[in-house]
Image 1: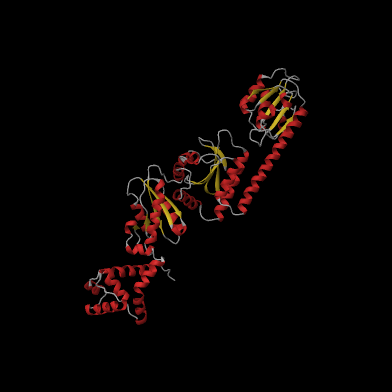
Image 2: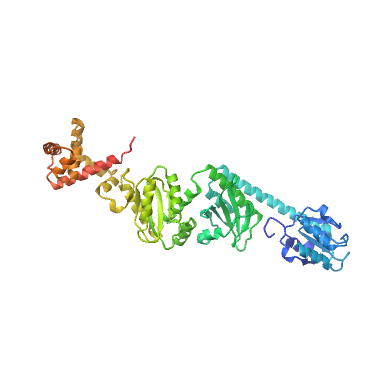
Length: 518
């Protein structure tokens, strides 16, 4: 059978039991794909009372009414699949009025030029139809069981879409209301083939009048994804040239839509969050087989990558989901925003002109109220991982609670470098060796010699500046500096000593800045 689920007029005519009658289609040869639900033998002049639609009507024409056009009209009105007229008992040739009546109403009319036993026809075709219906029921049960099991164990949208592809062999895409491809499985088709120019192709494919339908220039099968009247998106099944859509495809797509809806209601993260995160990781970790496929993936999410430059930004915030949604809305079409866990909220900015990333990055810092850590600007997707590595380096070097601004590798000085190394035991040991005696003295005597030393070193050994910044008289300052020299056993007039102590104090401050607050 053509679709594996229904029996068509063309198929029953090809069965040996009817082929022996030398069937000839005399009206509507182009409608032989109509499904046959049952076979009915009738010689009544008004057969509609015994018909319910979808029947293949077998007749010799003995009971035809005087007006043959009326007979054709009744057959068409009840929705019969086709009429098979056996010649010989009443008609030696098929009446032209009958042919014209059926042709005008789009119902196939077939004549048998040799007699057959109608009882043999009905027995064989009913067996065929019932077998088809059993297969259809079994297929429906299999689809039901599959998606019920997925929902019961909390499968996400990705697993549901993959199951739909596995059951049909067709590519399936879940898109949101702005025609962005969020979740997809391509089956045997290439990713670029499926997602290339996704948004314009999707916009050219209208939603069906009912829940599910085939439409658009490519003949996509589309079903709505909705809950209580609120539409969230669409599930799309793409056709293949040699495999027309079947009733099972519709069933699979609709059941998949139901499972996807349940996943959205019960699971986190949201579809958009997961899609952006996955696409961002695809770029950072080179997870797609080719860069053209990666570009197609980004473009299908509304971020064109062809002819663009890129920079990776990292933002360390508590509620990454809320900020991600805000940034995606504000920078739609230019930014891929994904939660990278401990690394922070990752942003891949795409732009045309060199340096054009800074204004949106500064706007993000203002919008989020946190530091934005920027990697290097790169000209190819293949270099984005380098930009991300540099953004990680900046994020690890810039202490928390700095003013909201954009920070790059150029902003990483000695304090930032030592902050990034604050957990290194060697750095910790160095600071302890240089300052332990001073810290012990402050703790024992309630002094703040460390604070005086910090101010003195920041003033590059200028005593006047140190006294002014520390609100001390010069005499008091001199006394403190002499005491610091005694405690440390060091000469503060030595540039080398001041350099060692400056590194140690900066390292100590970095370690303290990195401690979690209670």
